[in-house]
Image (tube, rainbow, N blue to C red; front, side, top):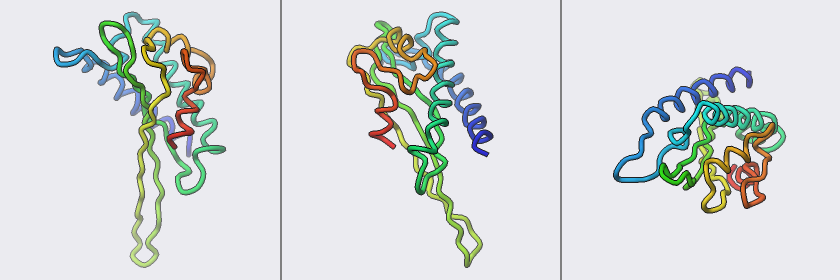
Length: 163
């Protein structure tokens, strides 16, 4: 069941990312855009989507032993997104979105009530981290545990403070 849910969440994330990348154009009002819109070649684009898939896989592997205990045993990673300066390639912030549910049955009325929390976990990035540095740091087998540039912190560390 979890694999089916992960696949569905992954497909939704991929579709949302594709739409986001097409719509993410820097405007005159601001200099930041979706990191995907700053990627200049197919290798970088493939690297980014590979990182996103590996992050979801890494989270699924540790979820049951860490964050997915108690009321919310089905936390799903939705999207890892970063805001990047279109001119300099510096990242303003990265955040990873999660959702879960906890269903309760109303025995008297035969209804299902659901608590559906969401989390926005901000990544512990050093100021002035560039897209290139982030791609290099996370383009590894298990990016959830990879040290982030100039911090030594990991995305896992950011989740521990958030979930």
